[in-house]
Amino acid sequence: MLHLIGKISNNDKIEVDRVRIWDYYLLFPSQIFQIKPRRNETEFKKLLKQLNVTKENPYQKISDERMILEKIKPYQISALNCLASYNIISKDELLEDKVSIISKELLAQYVNSIGNLSAREKNIITIVTSQFYEISLFGDNGLKCRSNLLESKYDAE
Image 1 (cartoon, rainbow, N blue to C red):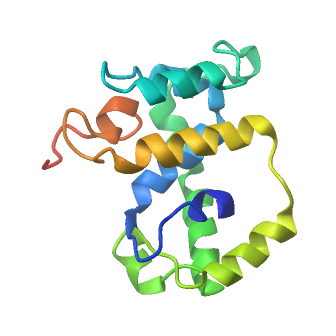
Image 2: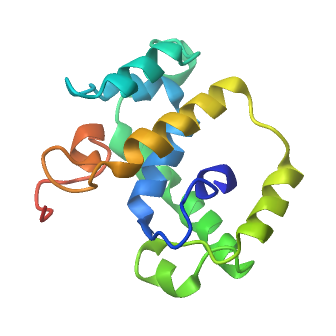
């Protein structure tokens, strides 16, 4: 979660659901192939080819992606609350289901203390924090709909 939060630009506020989706793909990297790139998303296609993950991983066979995301939600929210208690992210923004960084320096200290990521983890983080950062969370082309991890049918665009 620290590495994901570290990719948020200064003064940006992003949705908690977006961070949760990013975290899901970091935990289950083979699931990222379930998102079909649009025709104009050539960079996304290129990154998927470079990704060092097998499309079919027998140890990560998931029958209900939404259920898994809901099962890990308490852990994700707990991690975000912990980061808020350390004054890394804003408590007030978190109450409004947004994540914004208060202290990049403190975040960097914690990221450095946990060590480096594997190449696969770095690739997944690059994909989700670059390609999924700009995509709207809502609507037919939104991240919730495209990932099919969260209900998006009744969302306003």
